[in-house]
Image 1 (cartoon, one colour):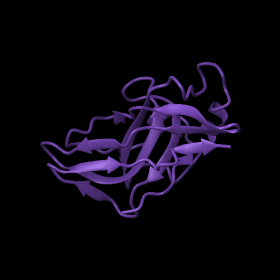
Image 2 (spheres, rainbow, N blue to C red; image 1 turned 90 degrees about the vertical axis):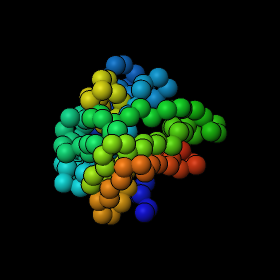
Image 3 (cartoon, helix red, strand yellow; image 1 turned 180 degrees about the horizontal axis):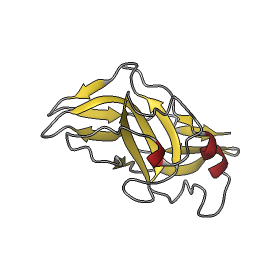
Image 4 (cartoon, rainbow, N blue to C red; image 1 turned 45 degrees about the vertical axis):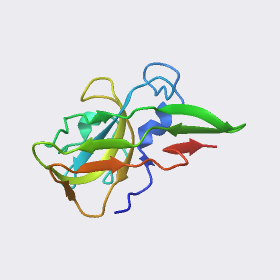
Length: 151
């Protein structure tokens, strides 16, 4: 299954340029990746959302907790004189005990708490919802060029 490229929420574009607590600190903030079902207030429906709790119908089960899981090894670093890249390690979760049902979207947000924060970007992981059955692993593999690059 082919995921779409990460797409920014409109407000996130503005928050990249803010140097206080109301903006993103790509060098220091903790970012989570959360999974959402196809019946959710989907990231694809509107790019005007700005707060994590505005999206509904998060996935559940199989070792997946509300608010998702921290994206590890995030970096915000220059790749050339005029280019900055935001990147993170591949995000991996294994379904244990029960299945993770109806997965369709991944959302990145800065994690103010386990279930709140400002939305950064989203990706449609598949054109149709899928299930991660017990004992299987879902890997959201980040592009080798990074999650996004600003030039």
